[in-house]
Image (cartoon, rainbow, N blue to C red; front, side, top):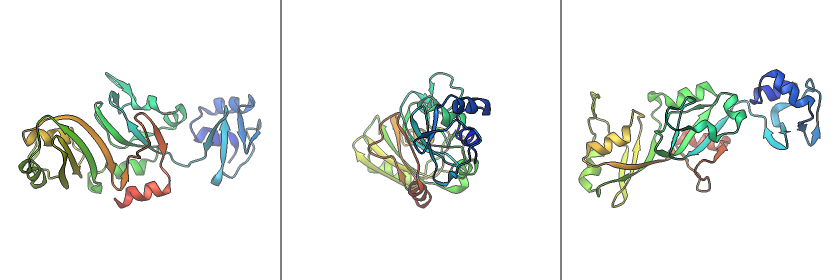
Length: 234
């Protein structure tokens, strides 16, 4: 693939902008500045630099973001900042989308990708991907509430009860809840249905993929092959 096409595919702007980056000697490949937009490279293991920042060529972007509170999962946010403002511009330019959404006050594991099939697969209700949440509750939890969540609660507007795959307490007011669906405000509504209230909500796992301990709020990382495999097998 020629260098101009590499930059274009990786989100560094329109082709005209990519040619300008190359012409201005701002792009290096294998440590050597390249000013020829037509120079051909094998993208299989290609790493290049733009303004000194290293990028590896990736056919698709698979991203894990530790979403902080106060950010909307939208490119056109209404009342808060967009989660896309937490990403480098090339990732937003190449069209990554949120794989499902978290409310602005919900924190934790958020997936993003520009692979349409991947986004569809992990947002489709048919996929039945387990998601693990931690909910801080206003009132103490008891065994009856946990059993009710596992047996199923009927939410307003639904025709069938929704059951938790698992529900257990991690503390007097800390609920670990595993669900398969991704309905609107589902966890908060389930907690309300057992006579409690969700004061804070955090997603810590999707499938077999857990939020890394060392990834702070607002930080992101690429998903590598082993991460994607963990996601599939969870």
